[in-house]
Image 1 (cartoon, rainbow, N blue to C red):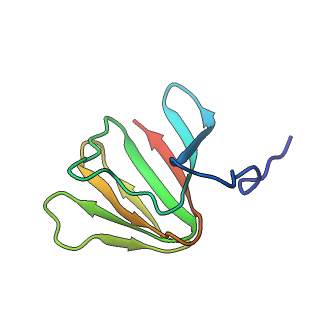
Image 2 (image 1 turned 135 degrees about the vertical axis):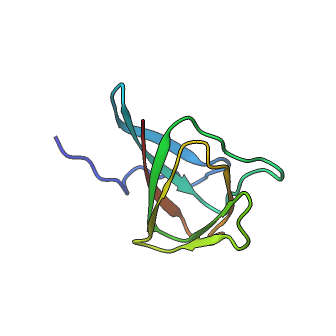
Length: 106
């Protein structure tokens, strides 16, 4: 059975939309939709898993603790965030959906 990653994106998005597309004991694949969302001030992700993330649509900036400039991501850009590398989403495009594909693994 097929499904479309871009289907069923809500018109209103007060919070980021996160959907688990597939999961096992070792891997989780998520589709994340942001619309001008960012991490709360002072909040840093510190995850137990590695995360590979790709931007499929839109744009975003991710900051890493101890690194000067945030990383700017556009469609097709991807990066690997190692477990416990503290990071935060500085911004996502306010005028369009930023659609992320994230793969979490150990």
